[in-house]
Image 1: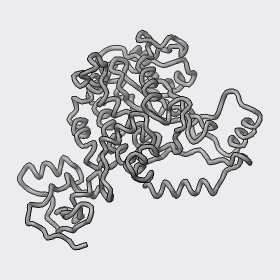
Image 2: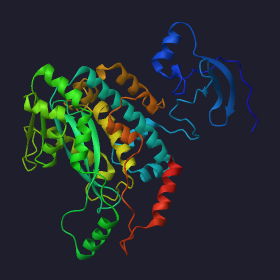
Image 3: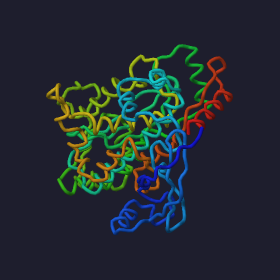
Image 4: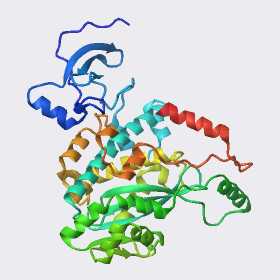
Length: 413
């Protein structure tokens, strides 16, 4: 195909920073400051032409010499097929599975998985900005935390999503994942297979360790809120791991002893009404079952990979916090109602607003968020361990199928 001639128009907008993490202009603030002074941190460095997007302008950093282009920080970086990320978010949060989306759009499952991962990282950027804003502004409400149970790959591998939410705003502050062992009634064959799985694989950490890691990120936030507005209340159910996890964090243990923090426990059998102290998480659990196909009861969908499931949870969290009305009083005009994020005060942060504006366009990178909470880093870097693939007949680990799955994940990446 013959390349079209350039019409002499001005070059496209330059990237907002240098892609080199070691460069002084890798910081968006530093690069923007230079541009405000009338200077440029880059020079034009030629252009190239592609069949999918036409001419692409290249740039070169004046400080480190690293080259980049208008596509370097685009969410569609290194892609040929352009999809609507706004439509993808709507599909993922309305009960559609990945294969169903691919069939409806007339594309492949691999493309949908890849675009979902790109969108998830942008959603994580929004959640990270909200978490950092909470540390600076301190909490203005009490917290509720509890576990949401589902399963990954098979019902022999149940899991627990421990979620922290605001008691008044019902906004999601953070989430962590814990793999569990199968429990409940089983047939003889199921017990034998479950015994084989226990010999082959053990969950890497407990609920207590997950809660400890999740609240370690919230120590400064929680204690700052307690000092500013008096006693801060933490509500949970009567799970035995929660008091041990909170007591194992020295700062939180001292705050509980000093009366700055109070841990209230509510029975999970209590009526799940508005008067229930755990209403915020009961409400979130209900929406997860309704809007995420993989968590619906008795569904044909289920998550096959832990890190992908956490990425889709991040997409749900952003849609829930910033695109869902806190109370749909007027069903004909829900846009006038504040969102959960607005009630929690997240959108008072310029960083959160910028990340929301760039949700469907800009490619965010981890080096721009060195102070991200640990739970967000685990999802971003895909650190979670997957349960093994077990042969249903022998009950032993199927190395061939596991290798095929690893290859598939490599292709998606």
